[in-house]
Image 1 (cartoon, one colour):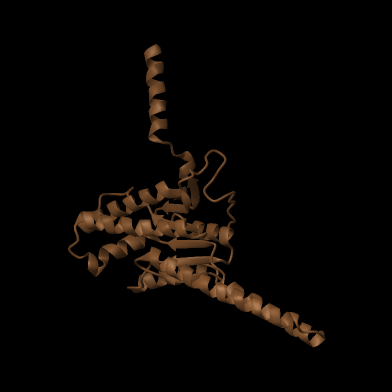
Image 2 (tube, rainbow, N blue to C red):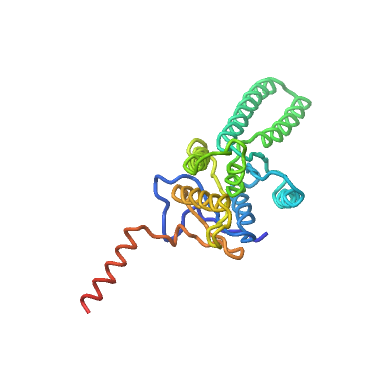
Length: 271
């Protein structure tokens, strides 16, 4: 896999992330745009083996089962995986809290072991200490808190919510509130932990208008979710043919656009 250069996640030479933005990177793109591959490569560079992969796909047919197997084969075996189709944010926080508790228990056991072994003398005791230290190092790696949480993908999370039995009969406003609640819960992971959150999502608004109401609702809700995440993220990348376009660096505010328009109008009047 081609290595990706990452200076500081979400920052670049032409723009800095606003102070109110969180440690979040959003990667959007169409089908086979390379968004998952880029997300995995970025997660590996930022977190190495300390990555929590959050998978939202559900194996409901043979085609999806094959897709899931391909994704599993592509990512590093050392990563931990959390399969969570809905209520992702709270599930991630529970998982991270559990790992933190295990790490603290392991650290306490390490201190106790060190205290005991320091009182021993002789070559045999030294050998035992070295062996225990190696075992402890191996165990601590298994319970280390992840540096990166990679969600792949938001597209299926929104789809799962729409197709869930609990959403049957829900109004458009209720569905919108439910989707935004999922997004806010995801952002809470970045606010309340030291992890960098990477979210992979589909861009489904560039094609034809879907024929059925459910398709139109899915398109609108995913677009809204992407907007909310992009507004809070340090960086948003738009994937095109496997290339990551830094949308955050290229974007401008309404005020900047108005200033350009104003300059153009002024120059025309003067001429």
